[in-house]
Image 1 (cartoon, one colour):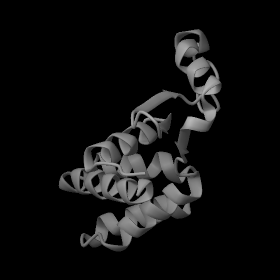
Image 2 (cartoon, rainbow, N blue to C red):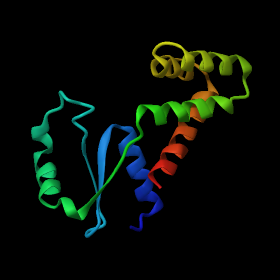
Image 3 (spheres, rainbow, N blue to C red):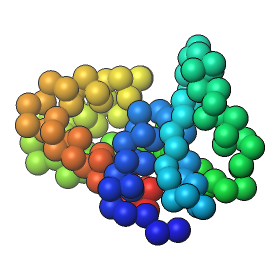
Image 4 (cartoon, one colour):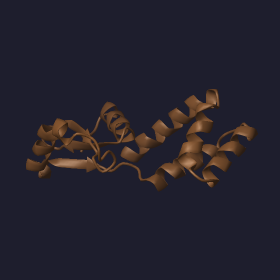
Length: 132
């Protein structure tokens, strides 16, 4: 399988959005569909044509795995190790070690000024590595 950097980035972005992402090895096309295990209330009917096409041609597809919670947690922990603002680093460490670590980490990052963009860049880089 030969993916372009653009395709790898697209797959990474789709997985981060909670989608299932598949690569058709014959047509070399990427197909993204709703991951109903993550969004059980989503309307499957909207995705029916794509889901049927995938099911009927399953052997033509390679499905990319999204990160599991423990993998996402590890990415957050590695990011925190590289934060050079000691106050923020302590807040993020507390977030990761307390209840609801994903929610509290997100809140701390969203209110961290320039570190918010640094987090997004780091998370995107790690997600691309995951896809590769």
